[in-house]
Image (cartoon, rainbow, N blue to C red; front, side, top):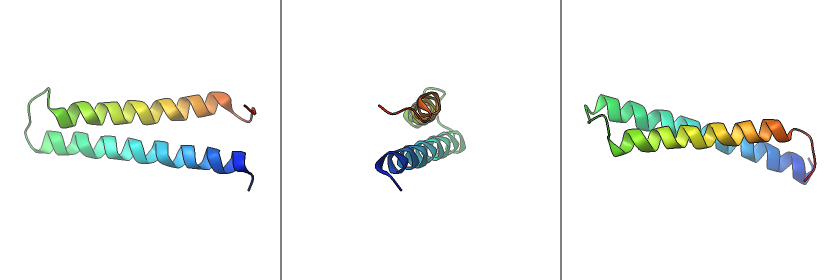
Length: 66
């Protein structure tokens, strides 16, 4: 495995982990009967957005070297 492949794999893994953490935060906020503007809910949305953004940028980058 080259360094570039390892970087891509790590990026994909951490992006998925960020998405799972975001979903868990949202589920916990909704289950806890928090307000609509709960900090956990907002953090969950931000985690999902960050993970999705990383996946999107990695897919656009594709096999190109930088």
